[in-house]
Amino acid sequence: MADFLPLEAAIEAHLYDGATVAFEGFTHLIPHAAAHETIRQGVTDLTLMRMTPDLIYDQFIGMGRVKKLIFSYAGNPGVGLLRRLRDAVENGRPRPIEIEEHSHAAMANAYEAGASGLPCAVFRGYRGAELAQVNPNIRSVVCPFSGEELAAVPALRPDVTVIHAQKANRRGDVLIEGIVGVQKEAVLAAKTAIVTVEEIVEDFAEVHPNACVLPHWTVTSVVQVPGGAHPSYSHGYYARDNAAYLAWDRIAADQDSFDAWMAENVLKAKPDDFAVRVHSLGGGLQ
View 1 (tube, rainbow, N blue to C red):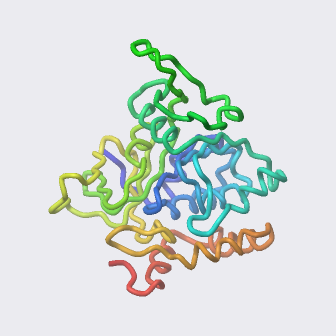
View 2 (cartoon, helix red, strand yellow):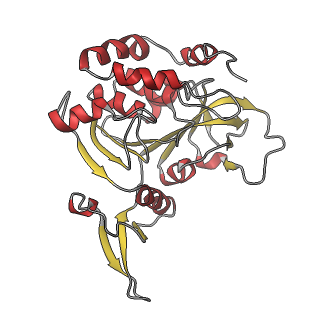
View 3 (cartoon, one colour):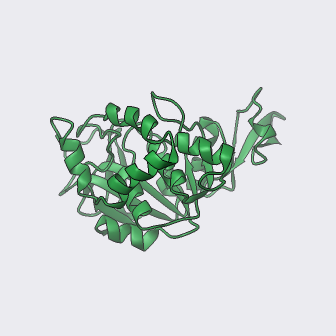
């Protein structure tokens, strides 16, 4: 059965220097509160993986906490590039990082392989693409039945996966509604899983049969953090804060403005601030 912990205690118990961590979310339910708490606690030398790294990974990188990034598409959604990531790759500021770039299909299949206990993912992909020329972990195998050449990548098995979801019940089962990326697979592939949620309820009423429910035995710790996905959105609770994404392009443009923003909004902040930020959107938590 999953433990129910405050965010500070969950991060302190399960995140550690040198860990391989997936803070997963796909356009929505991105675990910003958990990422900020990890930064506040000074966890460093991380290998971060994610299908679509955006603001929180830019923040980890700009704080010098990342040694390697495994990803497919990195950017500020709807705005442009990640400026702290680009500075780290091109100029080694504030520290050089190693990058391992994949396609979305490769990342999804690699998480699935990890969740299934397989050593690698085999799929049709990378035909005509040049990523294999710069990523030695993209290889090929020949199907023993058809003779077809297929792409192969190592399975992804995070030490820790962190996601955000709408609800958990008292047993620790987790309900995810709306757009679901690879959160389920990333949790099942991980040794440890932390799930922050908007609310804890007695049980899930009138759940659609196609809803994604992670049973309590797949989750290590559940943390109630209302607003914990802001500035991304939580389907049924609050909308995406588009202004925050637009502002980030200016904030992250140079190291000084980045450092000032992080000091005020992350290092001096606390988990409860996320609910306040969501309320400031107008309408607040639904």
